[in-house]
Length: 441
Ligand SMILES: Nc1ncnc2c1ncn2[C@@H]1O[C@H](COP(=O)(O)OP(=O)(O)OP(=O)(O)O)[C@@H](O)[C@H]1O
Image 1 (cartoon, rainbow, N blue to C red):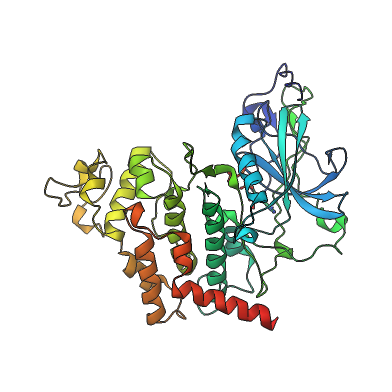
Image 2 (image 1 turned 30 degrees about the horizontal axis):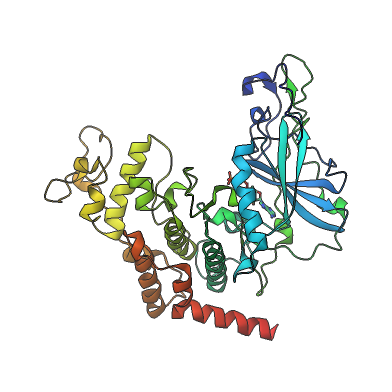
């Protein structure tokens, strides 16, 4: 075991103690480079006795910075996720990845497989480093600004063509089935955690992949001291957008098992994005694998319509965010059952004892504002019909809405499992289409 690091004498505590030029896009906060948090990484750093050389920054999250590296032993590019130096923050992720890498259940190729792991000691502590296959941008970032040439030309919105949406959803469902079959729930399913593959990069040189100009001005402390805990510059995230493989045979993988948990030991970390949270998570703080199915339902809606089904953000006080969600559940999916209403202590603000709505907005309205002019959110069916792509005909639209209704059941016990959903004729048809494409390639 490595020795715990010696605490630094004087790590800067706040952003105000730093002088540096911000980059054009967000990066991690500089003050998160301190004991117990991020490891200060620089391009061309070598890790694990020089086996891995850092080439480019791919991204970061609350618990890690993620880098493209060259694995000199296998002569291939890989992703190295360097976790914060908090042994508790990452122990579940590692244990889960180890279980998954030993499993041979169906769907394995749709969840990120760990290739190697090691520990790296730096000024901020001992960091677990997880090595994965190199992937491209996430579905979220690809749909936002990268896929100009493959977005749906028939609609005015930037969205994936139908065949891609179906493929992304089918692969995600196979990945969920694999996780659940191994007794694991993901807990944080969202477009940002579904990754596209990259093309074969074996002939692309390191110089081409390292665009090291994408860094901040030197990071300096105002008191002029040299800092051991922070990097000399901050690097901009550069997912491999230009190398994305969105060809007909692409394979989506679910990534980021940082919020995943064993079903036998449900998580108490609330990592699911607000808009994708199930009623039982919001009202009862209960989480299990049914949350993944609920999030998957929300993803179906998002990918077909390019908008969230529930338009809630985590801005504001938690109780108001929950109230907002509560009102939207009622509008979009229909009245919450009495059993669930009884579990929401703030229900009386919006509903009377007879179950009639008495208030349809949160907080106070400006003086003179007539509350009857506030339109309820459209129902699931209205919203889908309004926003769906034109090339989904009524018959298919009807089927998709039926699947959504089944998934978005207030009662988690009634939601279909991933395996049951995969047997639905709509998903079976997607699977057969994929097989035909593979045979024809
Ligand atoms: N195998 C990979 N190949 C390429 N990029 C990756 C890979 N794994 C993760 N990334 C990118 O790195 C970023 C951070 O990864 P990840 O979400 O796993 O980190 P995290 O610290 O657990 O984040 P979060 O705060 O979401 O829990 C993401 O934007 C993702 O796109």
